[in-house]
Structures are given as structure tokens and as C-alpha cells.
Amino acid sequence: VKFEGRFRIPAPRAEVFEKLNDPHFFASCLEGVSDLKEIDENNFKATLETRIAYIKFSFAVAVTLVERIAPERIVARIDGQPLGTVGRLTSFAEANLIEAEDGRETDIVYVMDVAMTGKLGSLGQPVMKSKAREMEQGFVRNASKAFAAPDKPAAADQAEDYSETGLLAAIRRFVAAITSPLASRRSEEAAQQAALIPQPPRSREPNMPVGAVRRGAAARTSLDFDMVTARTVEEAVHLLAEGGPSVRAFSGGTGLMLMMKTGVFKPTRLVDLTGLEGELSEVRMAADGSLYIGALTRLADLGRSPLLLEQAPAIPLAMPRLSNVRVRNAARVGGALAHGDPHMDLPPVLAVLGGRVEIAGPTGNRQVPLDEFYLGYYTTVLGEGELITGVHLPSQAGWQSIYRKTTIRTYDDWPALGVAASLRFDDGLVGDLRLAVSAATEKLTRLDAIEALVRGNKLSAELCREAGRQAGKGLETTTDIHGSAGYKKVLVEAEVTAALETFLSTGQAK
Ligand SMILES: Cc1cc2nc3c(=O)[nH]c(=O)nc-3n(C[C@H](O)[C@H](O)[C@H](O)COP(=O)(O)OP(=O)(O)OC[C@H]3O[C@@H](n4cnc5c(N)ncnc54)[C@H](O)[C@@H]3O)c2cc1C
Image 1 (tube, protein in one colour):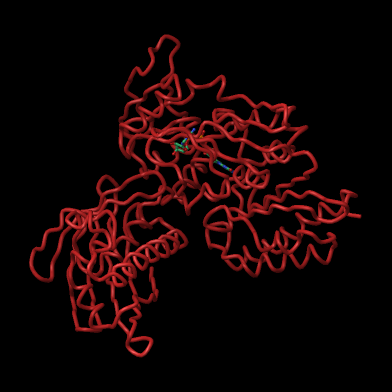
Image 2: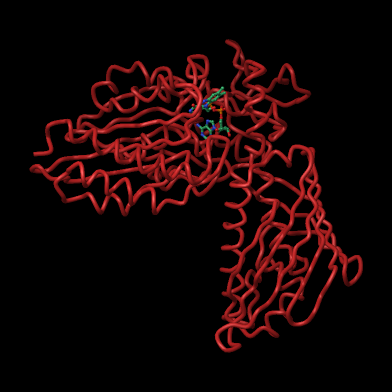
């Protein structure tokens, strides 16, 4: 895989080159690098810890500077060995420094060639590219800050923990990319086809004391881990917070088991939340018409809830096409939101209904709007020890909502595109509109510009088509096993148009 990129640093080239050659300065612009060992002036070793989605990974990294031409060029060879995951990456990375703005600023142009083996090799390019972009933005932000205030390192408080050559930024991009928990989407497909998805190990036994631990083992894997049943939210938070990155919440287990079977995630402990059923599996309506859906509610129960069918039918109507009845009977709302795969059906639906995720954590409770809950591919705002306890929806009175799912294989396949729309007419005009797209993008995305285009206007077939056209044109789509980015753009145009057109036929658009 080849990566290329360019970013600008607000300082002259010689200054930039000199600073980037100082491993401590360079590392201060990064996070997660420790144990730097300078073998000699061209060889370095370090540990790189990175957090992708909700998992932390450690990499043993070796960097050899192959070429260093002041003030314009650095070439390095990078070897990365992930700890606890099968695979390896090797890469050549080249960074060229180019004068810009009459020599007052410097453009850094980088190219990297990466080869990956083992489980790492099954990762798709969209994941890597998205992570590369994210890492580049972080590095540019920190480096720009440091050059703007030259006496202060970018992260002075952490400087002694950091190390490395000017190319660790690049390593981090790779590491971030290859440690995505869905590195093995293809393995997951294979597992599905071979019907290899085992029943999750269950820990909850009638007489099991609160917080009791027993050993679990996924039947057909060599994994060995503890299962702990939490009986209260506080206890679950405590158990999750104390354990570190290999401790995770377990609700339905359908997503976790895929990650464990493919070796992407190796838990030391799972905190079983199903002991919190009861209050956390309720769907209820308050006097003001607002709705609450508990995190332990099964997806199958969403599909048959009379209350939701009456108050927010887009939710139950989306369920029959969400995988199969086995998955829906096991999977819970909290897991479906926390998993963070952009190919999930529930998040866009709840987002356009105005959903807010209720989160409990070590420092208290908070609520986050669903359209701000996802930070990137498999990355959510959930911090260590935090768990989802439920979702709040405002009253849906006056709103009409729809979810349109496009699949390329079977009716109930993972979506190639999900489009959700929620609209309220106001005196014959579009009073308000919420539009969200998932699956075709690296994370759930609200179409703010399209909403603004339509809002306040009379809904017409032409306006629906124009909204679709602009949505397809403006959206950055991804390539994956469900289709190319170009194909997804065409789908977005057609499906946004079709979603809006459904409101034309409701008879409320005068
Ligand atoms: C064969 C198959 C097909 C599928 N097809 C589709 C599809 O078409 N559309 C679709 O939308 N989905 C699909 N899915 C995904 C499925 O919806 C998810 O696996 C499921 O929603 C996850 O819920 P769970 O309760 O099983 O989560 P788990 O597997 O228990 O957990 C998933 C993740 O969420 C975390 N987690 C769980 N609960 C909480 C909580 N309350 N707070 C914080 N973190 C939590 C876990 O630690 C883990 O990281 C499919 C799954 C399978 C196995």
C-alpha cells in the first residue's frame, strides 16, 4: 500500500529539518512513544502504544535512517512487530522538505510504501488511509504549535517519555491503521460463511455472587479469559476502569466474538453487562413524549416494541434487515452503538431521531448526541471505564422518519449504504430536517449542508433530486468489500433523493 501526503509547517526549512532531527522534539509532537533506545545515530528502537477504537495496542518498532540529506530529505526503513497479534509490517518512508511562502514556511511531502503480513495484511486501504489522515492532522497540529512557540516543546510534560526520529509520525499512522479491531473484515466474512461463529461464553449463573469471576474460553479458539458479571452500573464502571485495554464490556457478544475469533482482540477479562437487565432493557416514554431505550434492550425487542412502532417506527422497521434473528436476539442496543463499525444500521436511525447516548463512567454520567458519538472508523467518544447505559430520544410528534438500507448481496446483508432522514413540515414547508449517512463513509455523517439546502423550502421532486445530487457530490465515500468509493457516491445521490421523495407522498407537503 502506498501513502502520500503533504502538510505545511510555519517555519523556514533549515529550522524544520534541524528540529525534526531531534528525536525528543519530534516525539513531543506524537503520543504513545516510549522506551526509546538509540542503538547508534541511525538506528532506534521504541515501544509505540496506540489506542484505536477502544483497544490499546503495543508495537515494538525498529527504525533505520537510510538517508539524511540536510535540509531537504529523510528516508527510513521501519519494522513494526505488534505485541499479541500475528503479523508484521515493513515500510520505506521518505520525507521531502520543500520551501514555501518565499522560504518562510516549509511543506513536508511524504511517501510511504508499506507491506504487511499475517492478520495485519487483511486490513483494507480505507481504514489505513483514514487513520493516516487522522494521525497527520494530530502531528501537524502539535508541530505547528511548537514552531509557533519555539521555546516550548509541544508536549513538554511528556517529553521525557518520548523519543524517535522524524519518521515516527509515519509509523504511528501505520500502527493506527493496522490495529483497527476490524482489521479482519474479510476473516469475519469467512467466519460467517463457514458458520463458525460460536455461542458466546456465558458467565451468568443463577447463584453467582456479584463480581464473581470464572474462567471463560471461546470454544473453538485458544483464548483464555475471565468473565465477571456486573450487577450494578457502578460495579461495571469499576470493573471496566480498573482493567486496562484488554478488559471490555460484553453485552450480546456478537461483535466481540467476531473480533476474538479473528484474533483482533484478545481479552484478559470480559465484564458481562447482562446482569444489568431490567431497568437497562426497558423501552419507555415520559410524559413529555420523550423516549428512553435501555442499553441492554435486545435488537429483536426493538423490532417488536408496540411503543416504538407507534412513536418512532423507523427503529422497528429497520430491524428485519439487520442481520438475522439469531444475531438480533443476542445483540443489544449498547453493543450496537459502542461497536463503532460504520456499517451498523442502528446509529444513523437513532441519530436522525435526535438520539443522545447516555454514558456512565468513573467521573460521572454524561450524554452525547449520537451524531457526535463517533470520532472515526471504530472510534467513539467512550473513554476508559465508560459504558453506555441507554439512549434518549426527544418527542417525535410532528416528525416523519425513514431509514433506507442498500445491500449488494442479500436483503439482510451488512449495508453498502445506510441513509436515514427525519423531517418535520411546518405550514407546508420543510420546518426541519435531519439527514445522516453511514456505511459508505468512515463514520456516521450528518449531511448538514443538504439539510440547510432543503430546510425552509417547499419540498418538490426537483428539490429532492438537487439534494441527492449535492449529497453525492460533496460526500467523501470509502471503498470496501461492498463497493468502490465512486459507486457509493452514485448510491448516495440515488438514496438521499429517494429518502426525501418518501416525504413527498405523505400528503403534508402542500
Ligand atoms: C453475522 C452477523 C451479521 C451482522 N450484520 C449486521 C447488519 O447487517 N447490520 C448491523 O447493524 N449490524 C450487523 N451485525 C453486527 C451486530 O449488530 C453487532 O455485532 C451487535 O449489534 C453488537 O451488539 P452486542 O450486544 O452483541 O455487542 P458485543 O459484541 O457484546 O460488544 C460489541 C462492542 O461494544 C462494547 N459494548 C457492548 N455493550 C456496551 C455498553 N453497554 N457500553 C459500552 N460498550 C459496550 C463491547 O465491549 C464491544 O467492544 C452483524 C453481526 C453478525 C455476527
